[in-house]
Length: 85
Image (cartoon, rainbow, N blue to C red; front, side, top):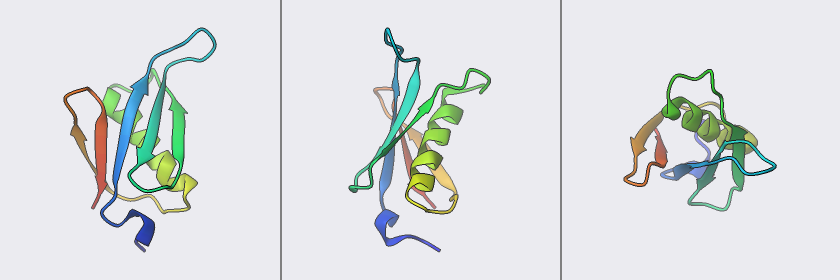
C-alpha cells in the first residue's frame, strides 16, 4: 500500500564525513515533513549507492512504510535522490 505522505516525494541522501566524535554516516531527508534517518557508513558495502539506499530505506521504515522499490539518481554534488516506483 502506498502511503499518501510519500506519493511523488523525493528522498535526498547525503554523505556526512567523520568528525572528532562521530564516524562517517549517510543522512536521508524527504521533501515532506517526515523527519530524517541517519545510518552509519557500512564499509562492507561495495558502493556508495548501497549505503545511500540503506539510508533511504531507513527513512521509509521510520515512517512505517513498507520496503518499496526505489530508483536512484546521483546529483552533481555527489548526493543521491531516490524516487519510489
